Image (cartoon, rainbow, N blue to C red; front, side):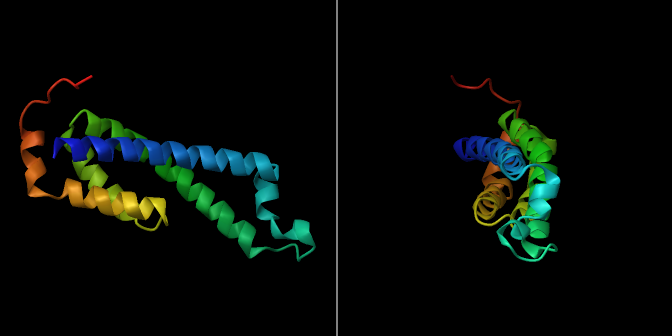
Length: 130
């Protein structure tokens, strides 16, 4: 089960980093926040766009989740009890991040709520194997 815990830690760090990277790339490609909000207007449609608003909301969600996901991932790699509790909560919020966040959220919930993982958090953590 220690392997699963480590995998959840790495997946949370990777998902947080991916969220930041994807948001920055989208901002650069569309020329900043105003360019993102006017995505559909560039192809000759109306100025008020639903696609731009949804894209901006998704980007804000990714950016808000990135910091906590990276922190929880690093905490899980160090086998911290707070990371297990906070990771369970973040996994629930991650379920709406389709498709990658949903997969990571389901896997994280399975690992963090299993009874087999409790002994890892009760004993002192072992040094990482390299």
